[in-house]
Length: 295
Image (cartoon, rainbow, N blue to C red; front, side, top):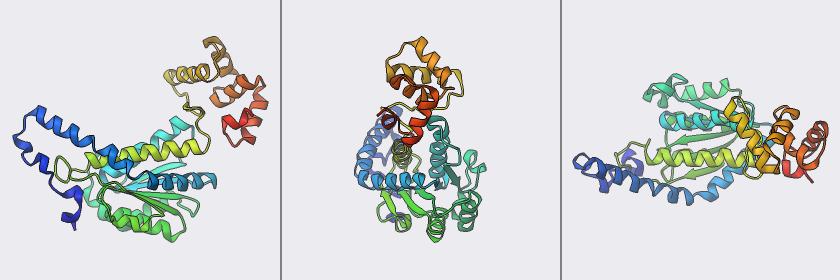
């Protein structure tokens, strides 16, 4: 099976990697990396379908759960943990489970990817329901842990998506929206932390960002639900107010305080010249979309 996977095949351009100079190695890696964006571009229709599935899950009160092993699992967790500070969502709204558990984040747990029963236990532990969406991530497209997770998700009625870096991936048959990015042979044969990992990271960025835009977490291109948990983020929040409304730094600080640090609310207060209470009411009626709250 492995020899059929393009991610496992040898790259003709780097057959003499051990004989290359450092500069030649870097040039080869850079050239190969430049092919990744083009490979992702070919899958935009599939990624769009997956984003719509995720938005639908959020709208019905469900959560997004990424599932993966090794690099794929770590990338899923990276995307998940960035959502609360960036978009102000509950940590349970976007989660990730990785073969081998938290220990696998810092230490390789290669054998864990074959544990099909663990995948079911891990999804049960996060309280997976039919309202949720599970996205399986596997460069090979055949990781047993991920296949099992998607099977279980389908069994209980959850919607599913998959991200693989080979065509005809096994995980695709269990996905309502399957993304197959043909990244090709790696510079270092079989090392899917390279181009395949880069492609997965790009797609995960797209899924979480576009989905959050779809539920009103963005106004213009500003992260208006940002959680200002440190001084840098507080200053960023105030700068967003200045850029989004045209007020001065002093006015931005004043409105930021009056809105209890809620950037969305402050924007509506400024642009509609209304009270905190009215701004909150407008946002509630608009489903959290600032642009609609301003009408």
